[in-house]
Length: 174
Image (cartoon, rainbow, N blue to C red):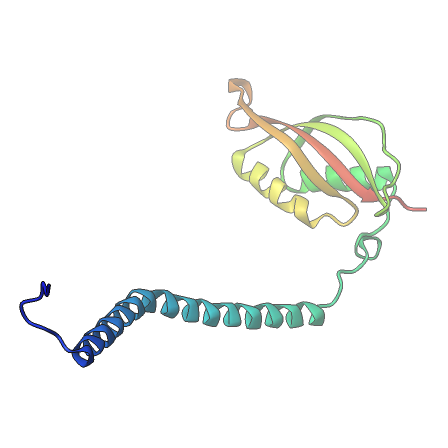
């Protein structure tokens, strides 16, 4: 018993199947196309990043190594380093009220010795600013400020009191 009202020939069936297959493959291609485009774009970005990395690598190889710290710092005694600090304060209009230090630590592998210290000073805001700025230009030592506290004292206005915890680093003269 034939249930079809309109019989379909095998040639038409194969054409319909081919069209359906073509339609399905087209839909698959359309749905996958953004992913294919994204993958190609990502591939281009990876290529550009590799070129940038190679360019940076070339620049790094051209850079000269940093000079040895012992060659850029003038070796000094503890007295020379602290004297330079006191002269710098005086030159900037800063009065050193007290200075205390801990034990001098032996030089590290880099040749630097560390002297933990505390300094109490009086100065106007402007002089204090100039003093702190001039600390980066010291010849015999470098300072690493751990803390700086400021206090107004009506007895010394317009000056302020400042207390600075610091580490004094220098290359010990041998």
